[in-house]
Image (cartoon, rainbow, N blue to C red; front, top):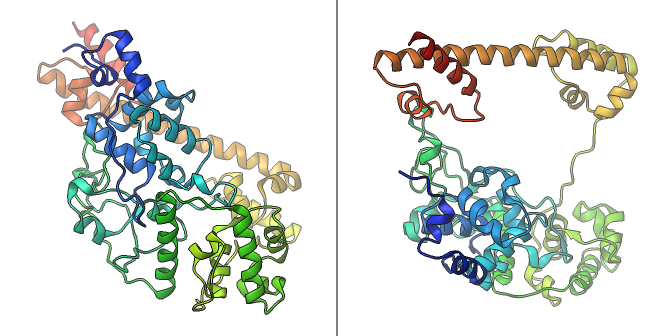
Length: 445
């Protein structure tokens, strides 16, 4: 079979000039995003996954081979977009990634509402950094109650502050496969679609056996406030930074009893930061904004619009990042570093500095000799582990090659993969072992 690229399949039957015109006009299906104007509006990556599935191609091929022609950004440097661990940051907002992907999808599909599938419209209004969750989560009851062709991944689930589903009042579950590794599908056969386990292919993540826990009233309040904000954003509503700043001043005055800066201690907010937010020096973060909204007893959406009325005070308090531990005495630090040097696991300088509660640069300045010894020992251990893994790979490949020879088959990448499930293609750690076994077979002939 000839090697036809995925890109060629999408534009099959078009000549070169027609193909270029199709790319400029928008050659991809104009799928309509799901949940526009609702709290469960789907995210940008969720739309991308559904679009790739509609065209019958992988997410990587759609991004690298098709969307790259609509953008000046080289999407190939993102590497394995379908399994990329930072997709939640795209769904919320990352200017270097959200904007290029959004613009490329908009030109390729012609769907103008794609600009509403992230928090990009709130840039400059609130601080959008550190808002995305580090792990992918989902609501098990939502996926069970929706038909398979309507399943999507809401951007609400990617907000770090949101920990439950506002519809079913259960906590979100981390997206981890509960089946044994022997039941996982090959990477070549995996489907990257919302509501489908990437590793084993289970629908509605039924392989995940984690218990469904009820949400608390505070968690439900945060989820509902966030869902209302997402519904307004995805509905096309725009917000002003000046209106929000006026709302912050009014809320702080209400909480502080007429003295705005007294609200800092009651909400757990730094007083200097509150000063910056009130005077417009920097945009307010999402977590402290929710703390002010809860203490004032108002709705977040009303504050964003610039007009609100006190209703009910919620017991939510902002908790900042914990401060670093106090630096210990010099002799105590040196003794702990010496203990790390005697550790057979050979920890790195970064691991030791995190254990001691001080910066890596500070540790290297105070104890350059001990840190250099740690580096040498860690690199030696790493080299030894690498040699051990290579030896195991050669041994495993020898056994696979012997099995193929006894069956009268050639030692090719395809035969090795079919026989053992080991991908020995270009760039893999088995590539050198496969080459050695091929040369050995030629010498035997």
